[in-house]
Length: 294
Image (cartoon, rainbow, N blue to C red; front, side):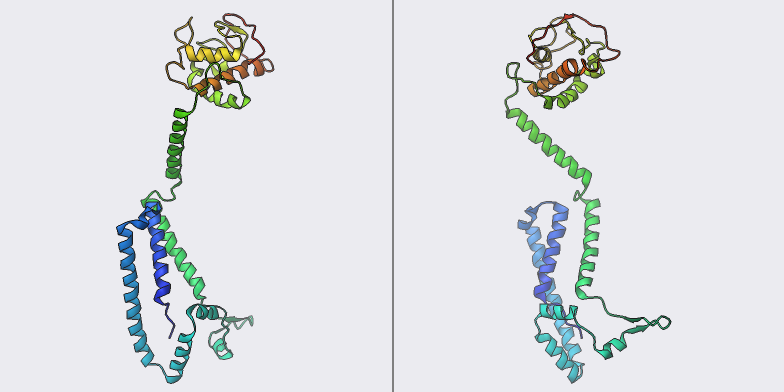
């Protein structure tokens, strides 16, 4: 007669499984204090205790049918602490008689193989893994738990909200405080491709709007190219209403203007002299004599 797992072992296991299930379907630890979870836990504990009581009744009936020797062996096993009993069972060796009873004789190859039962700890892990997989797959399809696309969307919304909060409180660059940085060129390229490429063409080579890669400029409100670009994006062109005041209209932020000014400076002063833009629009305006300061 096999020894049963005591209730003080089953209760933590059941509660642990409940926590896993609830977390999979709620994705938050707030459920621990809810009446629904506490009530489910209480009912589960009662069920485990009832199952243990029924098991005791069945065990008593089976015990009565054992021989005196089998009763003595069973009572001796019951005196061993449960965890020690598991430990002993994991490393128990069969006697010669037991080995003979479970011996599988290959016959043709002379290999001796014992038909041992799988260890209880292995079976426990296997059944737990199967149950966990069922719960995981169910929660994946029925809830948002562990769903990579939904998790990405949630994190994206949270990060976007955090950026918006930061941008709403941080001091934006102005024409006076904006400074050129190579680190801003890529971010400025993204702003340019979103808002400016339809008029100024890919890479600033010109189209509806002027070519930004040559040294001829219609408007030169500042002494440096970098500040001029910032001024133009913020205030628009006094000579062409198509070039609106992106900054004053609230379409782009101070950071966006700082970044796009860095990009235009890069393609005009750093990139064009090395690799002149091919197929660019004809020059417009007058030749600029920019100061060295960005």
